[in-house]
Image 1 (cartoon, helix red, strand yellow):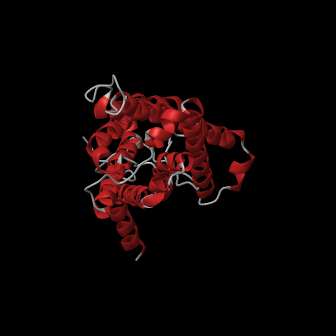
Image 2 (tube, rainbow, N blue to C red):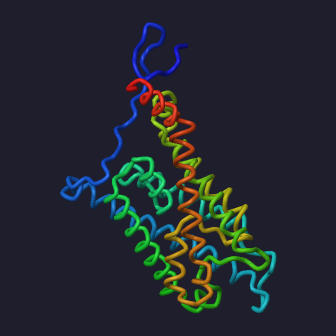
Image 3 (cartoon, one colour):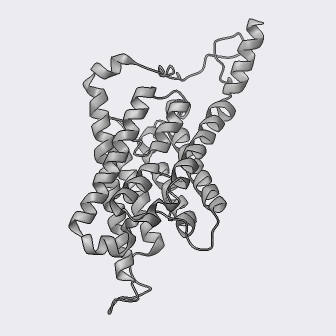
Length: 285
């Protein structure tokens, strides 16, 4: 079988897939399209639903296992496994529902990684992040409105560094966890794979959801698992206690660094972007 190359030669056929052109840094034409605003609305609603269901799951688990409440079972509830399934399952559902509209980011770190890879413009990236943060705030706000007593008593689902772990450990957990997620997003949406395996576009939400699930299993005991700045920010805003803000920087710096590493690794190592750039430079020279 002929190897993939950028153009046809006497030794190899042209590559059987087409990379989309890089998104412009600033695209003024986007602002005049309904599809742009529809995508922003989709990101807002998806993040709202994501926080509503997952924070309810966290609070429900804590209320069912509270040793200070008569009749509860410390070994009952959905457990950490159930919480991880709630986060991973909701991402699977919401990415499936919104991928064709907004790309199904639902996470500022994912948006940031795709922006660095020139998959989205700066304007779209900023607007997505704003919509995601507002959606997260509204999702947590709905949980508090419906279950205020439980919400306040059990911490509002806010992320925080757990006892016994240093800030460096927490930051490392967020960096690596987000790297796993964003790397999976790049791999699942790679046009090269989509061209060769027709089932890949259909199944793309599945590995992304599983990545979220697996990362939660590993990092819930450390940071409660952020890997999504909007999720951590929305919960902190609505909960409003000092503890929720103590280590908030970890849940922004960690995911953004992890996303940046994943973008560089996929684009310049796995997709040989660095080698192509060097080859082009040598040709011009």
